[in-house]
Image (spheres, rainbow, N blue to C red):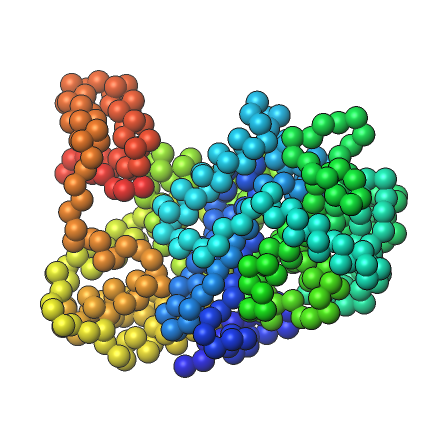
Length: 462
């Protein structure tokens, strides 16, 4: 059954086959680690996780590379403003290195709580400075760069194919360039490959280069690291739709100018998560919600957000509200109960071939998770024997990642959690609600979501 994926570059669904038969090369733009990932960011990482799981479900091996942007991403996407990591350092009174390390750990914890599979290769921009400098040197030798007072820039006029990914109107873009204007740029679309440290300013993150002391631009890291860690296996590159017009367009220009070869065959992008009447969630809007403040503190397991993401196609906006998260929690609990009711399974039970084909058909149609979830319900309501239904839904969970295979495994709580649970039970019986709330917070810090029900206190692994 063919795997069809929507390619932003061609604006169409295309049959996918890797460049090399043994392995798919997948690059996903990782986080800029100056703050927590918000739910909109995490929605993109969930779509990429489904893509990876579907590739594995189809029998491919996947070499997955994800970058960590820990330098070079400025507050203005067109190379103006302050480095976001340095800004985070000033905001929190920590070093830039401490900021990057802290929010990298936080991001990886969020990935684990959402059952997002880890990449084959994690790569940090700061650990690949020589590769970025080398790529800029190649562009310089080929005549694609020029120097300004604040850095080395890529001359987009030298690359006729610039903008083909986004199909953006370059004339309209020039009109809008007055919003972020650098009078030294030859063209509004030109972008920084290397930024100089400001005169008289000692940055926390800066390196020597052939052009002067400074730091790499945001876009060059993804080109340098994808070429380094994937080589010629440039199959699929992913990110959010906000990367299309600038970041990914610039990656293509500088990479193809340097190598003379096509840079990735498939480009895939996830749509925004919207709140407040269709407004996208963004840190710059100060309206961003995290797993912690939107779900965990409210007793909603993080996997409910994963479940909610499956109810909208990744290329369509997903609407967030507290009511939608409560509904997702209910939907996930219902699914868990349906699977529990099937019993423990039977030795030798195999997935039903007909339902497996239906499920594969939906996920292979550009990751159509809403229809795939409909197949899950059709299966669970079918007349198949419970053991077969269980084997089949657990096979589906290789893509779903909803921990359906763990529902019948009683978890032994750690001793410190058991003590806190017992203390909270006593506090509630004594109607000491302040102490009960304090103990709830302590339990949640240890990785467990507390939910008070008519049947008593329940704990869910966060």
